[in-house]
Length: 319
Image (tube, rainbow, N blue to C red; front, side):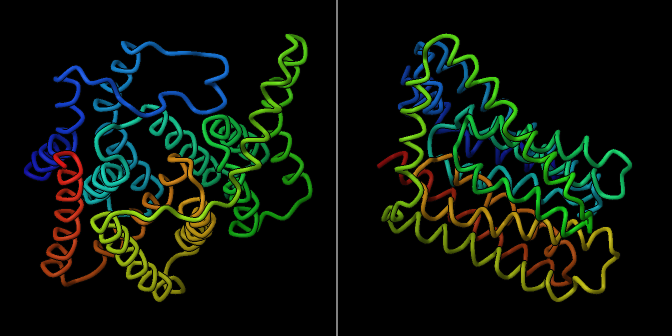
C-alpha cells in the first residue's frame, strides 16, 4: 500500500507543471494532432485542453497496465512496482510540461502490437496474431512515420520464436499495408491524393536529421537513462542463457525492438519517436533491479536518477 501512495505522489509531482499551466488558462503550445491529420482536422483550444486533462488521468493507468502486462508475460515478478515508477518518470522526462494525448495513443498501439507478437509464440493462431500486430503498427504509423523503423520487429519475432514461414511474412505485409490501401482508396475517390503526396514528401525529408543540441540538464538525464539501460542490458545478456526458453525468447525480441528504436530516438525530429526507447529501458531496468541483491544501493542510484529528471523538469518549467 505504501508503494502505491509513493507512486501517486510521483504522478502528482511530474504532472504539476501541466496542471499549473491549465490552471493559468494556458493552452498546450505543442502540435495537438500528428502531421498527417493536420491536413484534415483542426482542433479547438477547448479540445486541446480536454485532451491534456485526459492524458494526465490516463498516464498512471497506462503505467499500471504496462506493469500488469510485464507481469502477465512473466517478464518481471508480480510484486515489482518499479515499472510504474520508471514509466511515469521517463515519460515525464520526455514531456517537460505537456503530456500529449497522441503520445499515449502511440505507446498503447505499439505495446499492444508487442503483446500480440508475444501471444503468437507456440500458438495455433500465429497468422491471426501477426496480422493483428501489423495492423496495430500500421495504425500507429499514422501518428508517427517512425513506425516504419519499428515494423521489422514483426520479422524479428519470427527469428526469436523460431517461426519460419513465408506465409508469416506475407501476412505481416498484408496487415501493415491494408489500412493504407483503404486510406488511399478514400483519398482517390474524394480527389485528395495531394494530401498523401505532401505527407509522403515530408516523411522523406525526415529520415535523417542531426540530433538537436539539448541543455545540460537534458543531456545529463539522457546519459543517466542510457547508463541505467546499458547496465541492465549487460546483466540480462549475462543471465540470458540460464533462463527458461520462454523468457529468453521474449527478452531477445525486446532487445531487438530496443535496437530498432535507437535510430529514431537519436536522429528523427518527431517527438513520438522518442517514446519507445525509454520504455524498453524500463523493462530491462525493472527486471535487473528486481533480480539484484544489493537493493539499497540500486534504490539509491535509481532515486538519484529520478530526482535528477524531476529537477530537470522543474528547471525548464520555471526558467
